[in-house]
Length: 181
Image (cartoon, rainbow, N blue to C red):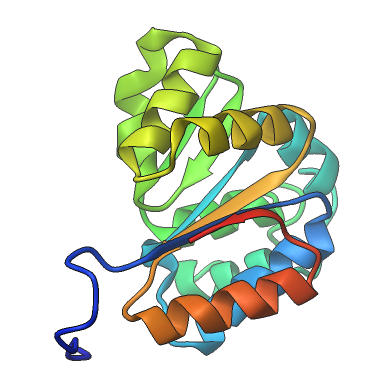
């Protein structure tokens, strides 16, 4: 566990961003793993439609989400047909929720908040959960729109300001949109 200097904020910085492409989201996810963040510290959020498009259940995809997740979940190499790469990833991350009423798939710390927000309606539930995760309302609305348009949203509560700066820089180079810190 890292120690914080007197200059560190009371709350560790949250870094979140929207990725238009599966490949860039996977690389951004790998950045977090390489920095020592565990799967259950990382929130992944996408529409169910994006999950179906990027991670079809009838294909075994070699992805950072799928490969690492399958290892963590103890699922063998043949996850493609019965489980799907993202499904294995979401199971390995920890708390995973598929919200049919909202049309969302979420894994990580935000999953429980969204499950409780499900009754609030599609946009209201998602935006409320994002705001509850320390995302400003205007940015939450941008993320909600991007997720509805097929983007993948990643978020992590960082351990330090320097981690947040490093993640932000690397995600920017990967084509992240609407990076929030």
